[in-house]
Image (cartoon, rainbow, N blue to C red; front, side, top):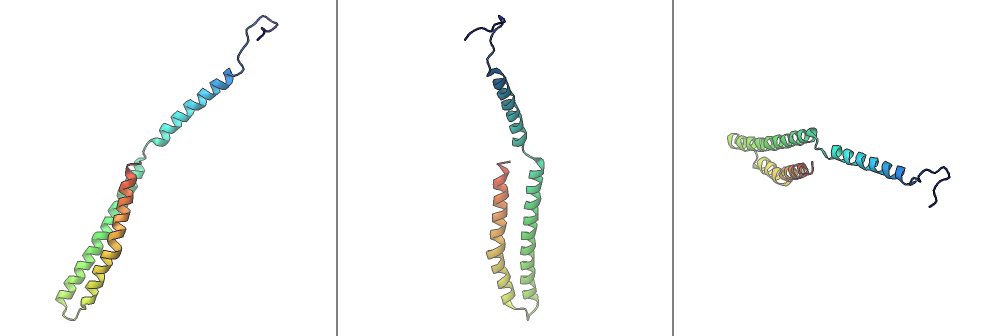
Length: 111
């Protein structure tokens, strides 16, 4: 390279670009730490949904037990009602409860 006519030093034309790259890299690192921080609202939502699902499950079991009690008390009550309710709990409610709880507890580690 040749020295400029004024006797000064030559500057690297890539220096401003390297400085700008360093600033962008620092901004990206700070933004990554903000995005990666877990949200307390997300944990509250998970616990609220979990409690709701468990309450619905307990309510369904309570209704089933009430139907069994009604079947035992009332002589004309059909045994089919309690059998149908039991089948419903086994085939519909239990898989949904396990699906929802498994999903939310599985997602809690990903934050």
